[in-house]
Amino acid sequence: MSNIENFLTASEEDAIVAAIRDAEKDTSGEIRVHIEQNCTGDVFKHAMEVFHYLKMDNTKEQNGVLIYVAVDKKSFVIYGDKGINEAVGKDFWDATKDSIAAHFKNGEFAQGLIEGIKKSGQQLSKYFPWFHGDSNELDNSISKG
Image 1 (cartoon, helix red, strand yellow):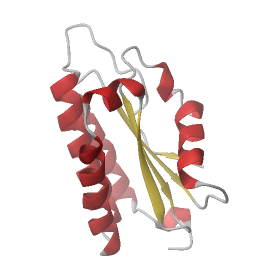
Image 2 (cartoon, rainbow, N blue to C red; image 1 turned 60 degrees about the vertical axis):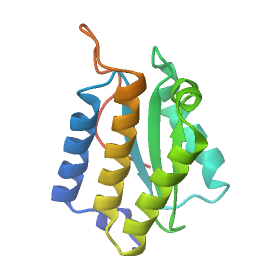
Image 3 (cartoon, rainbow, N blue to C red; image 1 turned 60 degrees about the horizontal axis):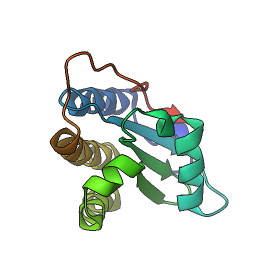
Image 4 (cartoon, one colour; image 1 turned 30 degrees about the vertical axis):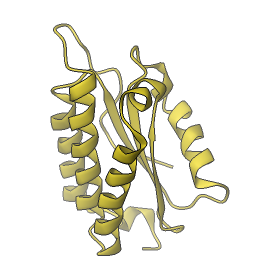
């Protein structure tokens, strides 16, 4: 893919946003997807910058998860905030990354993102269950840069 607008179709984007809403219904955690055409520097460092730019580090329980994709670089990062990272082991993030990568390798970008969202939501609901009065702290839409 050479164009960020061709990375996902409108219906695929809708399915991803629906997956985010579904994953967040049982958790106080927050999940975001951010897609950029390219990242000229270190992808992980840039994902951390995007995490901050999207104000994902401002959640009450430090339980935000960002799935960042650099289309031209064919690279992605799953970045979890301090609260979720302290709750789950590194093997969880590795397994989630491997699942997304397998789908991406087959050109199934939307399915890879949806799978990563589902896995993240399952862990978030386990360690940060939804509670009465919880509000959605962050937008569920896909952000693009």
